[in-house]
Every structure is written in structure tokens, then in C-alpha cells.
Image 1 (cartoon, helix red, strand yellow):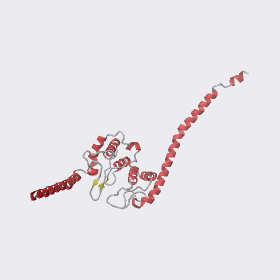
Image 2 (cartoon, one colour; image 1 turned 60 degrees about the horizontal axis):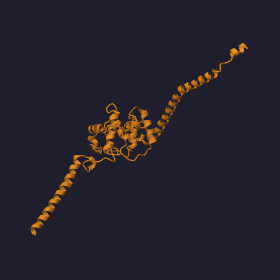
Image 3 (cartoon, one colour; image 1 turned 90 degrees about the vertical axis):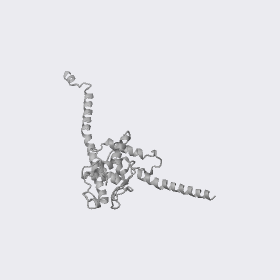
Image 4 (spheres, one colour; image 1 turned 90 degrees about the horizontal axis):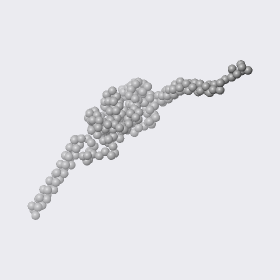
Length: 269
């Protein structure tokens, strides 16, 4: 009897065993769950790259080469990054309709999912600027005044003071920024499309890009008012001077003719 009682288990032994089992299960989940998630993400990325390669072969390879190395009809895409693809394809500039001094913005022919796949494939060819997140391009809380100063210093020479665009040399032009999404403005600063210089984070930090986006939205918003009345496209003194010369001087000539005619009538009477 004594031997049997000595072998009897403590009442709490089952509880301890259960807790140890749960702890072991939790440890196994912590050990294997992240690896499983990482593997799933890697698989999804591989599928995106594969689908992007198919889209690239159909719509881009004829100009940029089968491996993105570039040809006489299109530059190399190795190292341009996903941000350049998202900007060029997301604004309809690519695929290009026809060669010219500058590729214009046009209707987008790819869905955003397809653009993401193309971007994934091009990014796999070489490291480059990455497509920004919604948080990176959100201008909420940005310094509009600082953005205006940065814009006038770095951008107004081509886009003019309110982002209405302007002519450049050899048939090129700086496009109008009104209605352009914050993401595409951010990507343009990152990648420097066509004649535009690039402003990487080492040159212009993320916060300064957000300040510029906030300024552009401020001066081109639906509720923006022009303190000078008719904005005339915001093109500056050239358009304003031309307006004054044609309409102002024309009005003065009309008044002078009217006064002379009435003076002559008064003398005859």
C-alpha cells in the first residue's frame, strides 16, 4: 500500500503538463509562423515578377530590350526602380504612343495591379527608387510655407510659381501639375523623368517632398483664390503684360476714338 501511494501523482501534475504543452505549442508557432509568412510573401513577389515579365514582353520589350537593357528606341531600365515604372505607366506616358522630344501624358492602359507587377519585374533587374507608401505622400500636417519656398527654389524655373507648367528647349516642356496625384509628384521628384532633375532623399528628405506636395495642392486647390483677380494661367509678368498691352492699350485707343468723334460732332453743331 505504501508503494502504491508513493507512485500516486500530484493533483496539479495534469495542469502543469497542459501548461507545458501550450507553451511548447506557442514556441513552435513563434518559431515557424514568421518563416511561413516570409515564404508566402516571397512566393507572392515571385508570382508578381513572373506576371510582370509577361506584361513587359508584350508591351515594353520592343523598345527597351528583352531584358530591360535598352535599345536605340528606348533607354535601359536596369536600376530605375519601381517608382519610375509606377510614374511612367501610371500616368499613361508609357508605353509611348510615338517617339518625340517628350512623351506626353495620356490615358492609362494598365490596371494598378498590372502596373505593380510591371514595377516588381523592373525592380528585380536592379535596385532603384521604390514606389512610396500612402503615408510617405500624405501631405497632412506638412509645412505649406516651407514647401512654397522649396518649390520656388527648385521647381518654379520650369513649372512656374504655381505649377502651371512652361515651355523648355528643343520642343520639351514642364507639364502642368494641377490635378496630379501626390504619389506621382513624389515619384517624379524621386526619379527625375525626362528633362526633370531627380531629388533623392539624400538631396531632398521625405518631409520636404511632402511640404512641396502640400504647397502644390494649396495653390491649385478648388478653394484657392487669386488675390489679383484673373490668374491668367499663373504664368507671370509675360502673360499679364501681354494682356495689358492688347486689352488695356486697345481700350485706350477705343476711348480716344470715341472722344475724338464726339468732339468733332460738338464742333459741327
